Length: 205
Image (cartoon, rainbow, N blue to C red; front, side, top):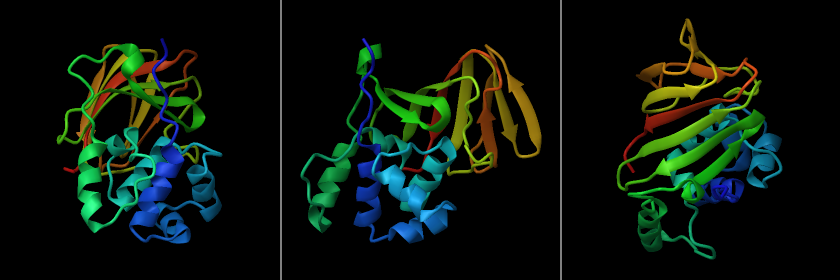
């Protein structure tokens, strides 16, 4: 069975932006994209790239892990309820997680993230990451940086990593680890999907 895809990514981002009193134009300015792009992401017309998603979550002060569990429908945040809802965001996923129980985020240019587990209150993105041939972490070709530390292990395919001024080609069995504040990007220039397991340790909730 296919894992359930997270359908409310755009509305979830809009909710967090409005909850923090950030205008659409202000968010677009801070992220470095057009207001039209942010609007299209929030309405689900387009999916963000990996780099844009990290830029948005960093600006809004949330973790990528938060996005896998949207707030309950109809919840109206206020100063007292926010704390309770925040506690619900990181629903435990495990200890055993079968393939059809993973939550899935489909991102721009053929990148897929599958959540392999979630153990609140720890802010760790435990992901099965797939880069389809020709896909990249940034559709604009730029480098990204975000808070935390990144660990990856490639299972199949090949993946090109730009890390600061270094260029690396990852092959099955290769592992990486680095400070995520170092500018970096991924690109699959091969002919088969690149699949790996990634841990991204973000800021505490």
